[in-house]
Image 1 (tube, rainbow, N blue to C red):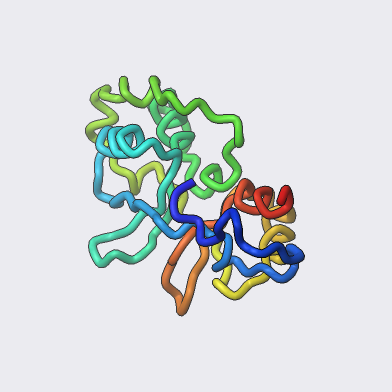
Image 2: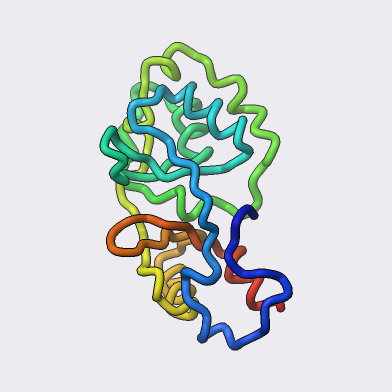
Length: 171
C-alpha cells in the first residue's frame, strides 16, 4: 500500500495507542463526478486501484466509487432499479481480482453515456484523524466496512482499510 504513515521499523505499541492518522494511507486519487463510467474504468485500471473518493468541480467530496460499482453497472439490465445508497465501496470483498479484465472492456454505449455520479455511493464514512484505531476498528465491524476515510477539520486526508489495521495487529 502506498504512503502509509507507519514505518515497518517503528517502535511497537498497543493497538489502542495508535490513531487513524498514524496508520492511514495518505495518497488518495480522486475520481470526478462528471467523468463517464468508461473514463472511470480506465482511471481505476491505469492506477491499479479498486476504488476512489468522488469530488465535484469545487473539489468537495460527494461520494465514493469502486470497481464493484462499475461491474454492477456494466452488467445491470437497463430496466433495473437504481441501487444508489448501498455502500459497496466500503464492503467490497477483500478477495478482488487485480487484473481488472472486465473493466478494460467497459466501452458499451451506456458506459459512455453515464457518469460517475450515476453509479457512485453518495454516502461517505469518515473518522477524525485523532480517532483511536481501536474505535475505528469497532466502527468498521459494527457497520460491516472494509475501509473508512480519515478527515481533519472536515477535509479528507487519507483512508484506513481493514488491511491497515491487520498490519498493526500482526506486528
